[in-house]
Image (tube, rainbow, N blue to C red; front, side, top):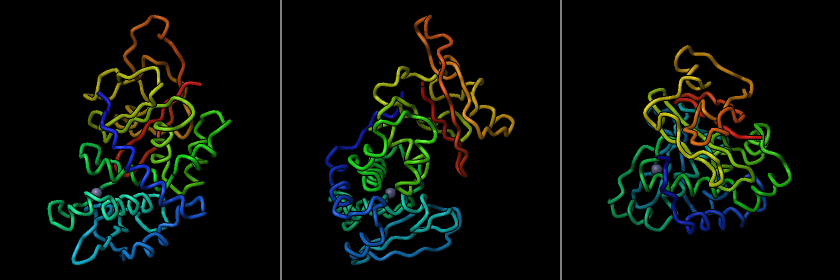
Length: 263
Ligand SMILES: [Zn+2]
């Protein structure tokens, strides 16, 4: 199954109401940290985590530069927005202050199983890409990989963050799939994406896919490749056999993301 848990809308509203008090399209995280009076530090902590929030009478956020997290990089911005969630969402904040929510090393894209981490990721996504501003960038444009790039440039977020936000509120059905090489970590289809079940579930990466080529032979595709529905998905109707889709892979330090869409 795909990951069903969607954090409460109220968390998104909270994040967006903060973002919309600032005029810039690129959410000014430094300014927010200043306004919330939360100091932070960038440092090299090895490969242990992307970001971490600690509390000792006041909040303090660590960004791990050795994994590419700076306040101005797309990866670091998402990490920072995630950590800000822990300082701002009421039950996270209370949990950290009371010690019930332990300081935890957050890793981008790898936290889908944990409810609070999902909430913090959702907060981050809404803080960096408020729906109103996001849709303004998408309306009237057909989905293709260039639009993902446009969103990523416009909001200074990673391609993955842009694609996931598009799957949730975008104007065209897509699916985003993530693997670290052993099976599928998670996948997220738009509500109106025509296929909801992967060919082998989450157990393995289907062999006729770009993603599989990478983990098998290290082969990378810079280009968008045309694929057929049955390469990735369980199909139940004969007319879906051969139905054309496009796939684009994004190769990152922690695995591969596939974005798939139909024209
Ligand atoms: Zn976290």
